[in-house]
Amino acid sequence: MKTLLTFLTISIMGVSNAQFVSEDDMLHTAIGAGISATSYTLIYAKTKNSKKAFWYSLGLSTLAGLSKEIYDGCIITGKFDTGEALSTAVGGFVASYTLNIFTGKQKRKQRKVNKKKREEEIVLVSH
Image (cartoon, rainbow, N blue to C red):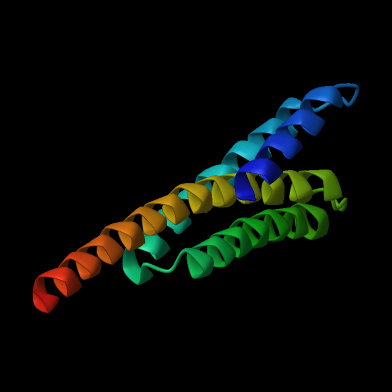
């Protein structure tokens, strides 16, 4: 299901190329992805829980984007840029989702290996 959703998202993004994306928005997306990927890796290494790592890393990148735009909007320029905050959150989502897909496959492989080991142990014990 995750693979199908990813393929569908990429297909839709490839078709919708009529929108202009500024260099600053691309930078915000890259920073959001960097924050999210780093936090996902650290949280997953500590907890071994992919759901917790996904949500915390997504929240952290979104919080970073919002706090930067609130700082810019209230203190620097007086204008809150929703597009830049959204770009940071989208970058965080892409990185978190990508890492979540790969850690999920690794878990399934481990379950299959553990299941085979248990089946072999049952066969050996029953003989």
